[in-house]
Amino acid sequence: MSSCPVIAIDGPAASGKGTLARRLAAHFGFAHLDTGALYRAVGVAVLRAGGDPADTSRALSAAQALSADDPVFADPALRGDDAAQAASQVAAMPEVRAALLDFQQAFAARPPGGRGAVLDGRDIGTVVCPAAGAKLFVTASVEVRAARRVKELQAAGLQVIVQAVQEDMKARDERDSRRAVAPLRPAVDAFVLDTSALDADQVFAAALAFIRSKIGPA
Ligand code: CDP
Image 1: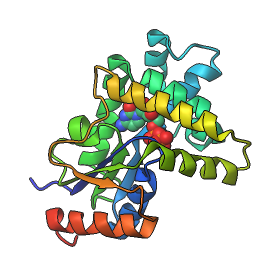
Image 2: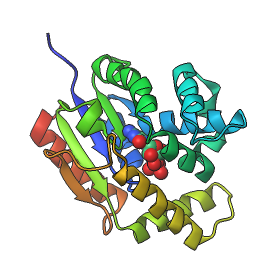
Image 3: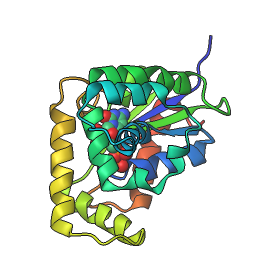
């Protein structure tokens, strides 16, 4: 049985992994899954229902009720910082991670379009797709990542305090890296790409060279 190629991209907040994942998916004609959106959707669902994202039973119910065509995926609140913080709280719960695992693995095994899949997140190379053909860990200094997130938020018309963005990002990095289940860390066979001094084109070129060496030109 032949399976589709899978590209796994992990990394901390605002490291550029989402931009890279979308670009690689377009280049190869593969389907893309932003797995952070799943955790954000669970966080937003709990907040919208007036719940506390630290409440495991509410977070689990929200994860179990989530469907691929849920309107929350088109909600601008999904990209906001409240959603990010709530996502990282629900993402530390093993029950929530388990509830979202099947969907992610099914996407990688049978991606829409049937050509291949690019998944980005925190645990794709380590837990979701440990057999992925190419694994990248995209990172950058916290200062560079905070500056990128500030630019994104300002472009979306939001008022931001740079210091607050940096503090929130550090808190989320810390929670994501220290959690007991599926912590943020590179897979042993991942290509670690530090994007602090690179622009999007340079990141894409470096990633492409690595992926071609692993899965061929596709
Ligand atoms: O875009 P950004 O990097 O800021 O965050 P995201 O990828 O949308 O992820 C939001 C949160 O979801 C992260 O801080 C993680 O806590 C969690 N997450 C995770 O635990 N595992 C994944 N595969 C993806 C996201």
